Image 1 (cartoon, rainbow, N blue to C red):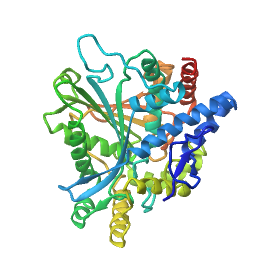
Image 2: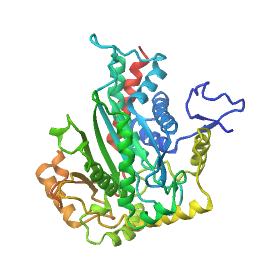
Image 3: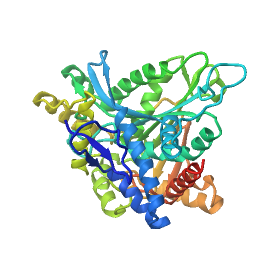
Length: 435
């Protein structure tokens, strides 16, 4: 059995009991972030070690929390992972103080203050595969968004822990699909899937979310859920939301959030919802050109760009009893499913008039770009420059809010504002060392 340590200046000695020297696990996405951080704040070894510790704590929890969801109804399974900001921040706190968090209890109850009544969850939907590689559509597809949320909330969470309070209960769940190497699909599922991949997959995800949310919902908890999809995931998140809203449990009306679970839908560069009339042509021409014109702005993902890293992840998951499903029959079905996704995600998704969706489009995204959207945002910049209003465009649907931002189809996770967030987290960690 192979074992690994996470790259750090002072590796923890109790990570493995294997007598052989553990192999070093280097997080490519995190290392890219460190390079960008150095460009902005200089090569300060003390700070860089803290940044790396943040990334490694993130990776450790993401890997530890990988699970497989099995749907008997649909005859399918898929991998997913999650990370709770409270647990993430407590791990950082313990590392730099050497102490367990001491959370104050209220005077009139034995419950710990950290058992918040308000529970927030963000579900991140996968994008379309670039080809028929089974590494695609895994639970780490958009790790950048999960990392973005964790790091942004880390400083406030650490301050609360330091003051004896419980951090906000915020959890991010990253979804994979059955077409991934860890998924399983039946012939019956594939037959339904190939007719309408986006709709069928949204039904599976809705079932999972309903069951997953029930485990944390009770009379004492108030649950709010954001469905966040990028690219193909934009249409997926919207249709999943519609499916959930068929139940009387969910609502998009904030005034009803005390009695029901509030759902917010956010779609980033959703090709299937875009106003372009030539979606198919734009995908075939725009997708390869996006990579050429954007350059190295985004860094590596936790996917197939790093085969050695993914091999190490497989070994870690294997130790947890999570193994790949790549029999000849499964490979054939999964590759067929991926082709179906590639063909489907460019097709228009029609939503119900009452469905509320926040749509964000990259103004430089050649997959969705239209002159009308860019012209509208240009006019808004003239009128409302320097405010959120400068990004607003005219919605094509009654209940949509449309924003145009200066990005390509992929999202630059380590942009300047993100580096500021990381630096702020580093500054808070420095103060912890003096406790």
